[in-house]
Image 1 (tube, rainbow, N blue to C red):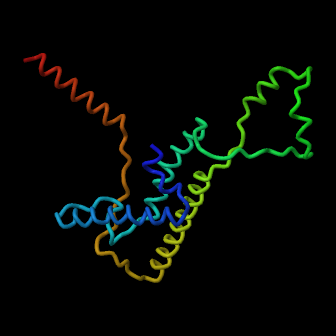
Image 2 (image 1 turned 90 degrees about the vertical axis):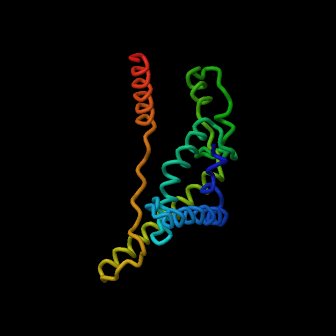
Image 3 (image 1 turned 90 degrees about the horizontal axis):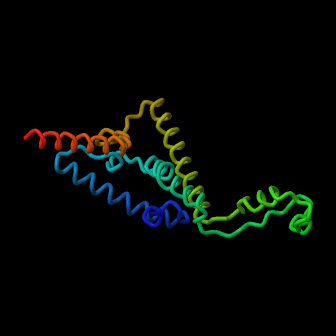
Length: 187
């Protein structure tokens, strides 16, 4: 799954290159919808770009949670980071003393090691970059609104995407199947 959606987890230049390619596909779809007289889908209207919002939302709602799940399962690649204790003497705590409580040793084994994961670092950096772009766009829009400059979009901005809830779809399918089965029984 992560291989399909990991563009935001790449280093910035590669992430921007991939994003540019994907957004151009989106805009081509929006152009096709407009040429057919259809409403333009959210995020696909090149005259009202929402790239930063699209990427921030994609990272927040799709890529980030998937990476968190992989991390929780211990599946994210990375390098272990050795923790230094405050005194700097690591040998003292590595030895098990005979009177150490078995619960303490169990807790020590349960502790997760810190792992530096470049994928996670790139994801965090790219997410912060898009959040800054959104803030700048909002500041610019507020400034334009105060100065009375009209917005230069050919089409009104696309509405935000409404999340699809699978459980509602599944309930709807189940209801349709029940209705179909009931009508077959009545025949």
